[in-house]
Length: 261
Ligand code: ADP
Image (cartoon, rainbow, N blue to C red; front, top):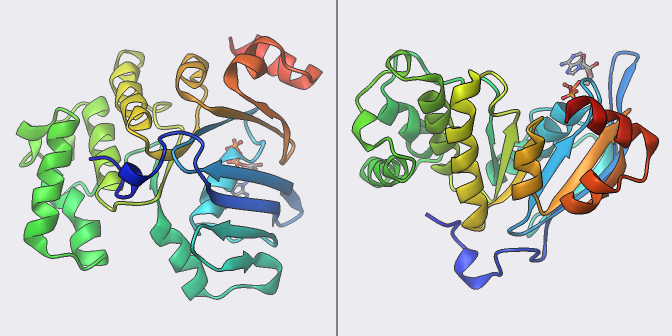
């Protein structure tokens, strides 16, 4: 269940897996990312916090090729340096997408597919892995998040928390180097948030590398190795959670935390 290479690597603060430098992205006249820098080490849990509209989702989407920044350099371990100003082609962006898997705010499961079909779709049909191998892997992962008995269920037969756990399994089944979570619990009823955060925390403890956008600061405090506070399209402040949450250096960080805590 651990990421493929984890046995050979320390579970925390390994070598840089991903480095982004000077990311810029505008939507029309709205400059959303204004030279954002980000480094994610192997085995590290990086949490992005910040006000609505500060660019958190756009960063995540840029890291896996769903958005193409206007400028900036992105390097993923073992891959080529991607210079967005040079307008990289589709092949480069797809190569980037293969390295990571995203868990969305809304699980985005196919409603007419069973749980098992949803999970094997990516590994089997997209990645071309043998179907029986994809099924065995999916069953193992579903058991891992307590959903072994739900493989023949359809998404609408599950609770919101169960649906989101399937969403997580679907991402894990792609065996990515990097997991990206975009506010994975913000669409859930409050009583369902805990079960999903617990799964994410367990994955973190197993050594998965992840970038998490969340407003759940208690979770960030407990699970993050590194917290980035985004404001106005840049990383205004970053540090280990105990430092950022208890002794923020910037007034804007202080005000954000006071509002949300
Ligand atoms: P956050 O996740 O911090 O709330 P986002 O990255 O979602 O911030 O959005 C930052 C800004 O970019 C917002 O003003 C949003 O409206 C805008 N934006 C995001 N995606 C698009 C898009 N596809 N088209 C136009 N504007 C967008």
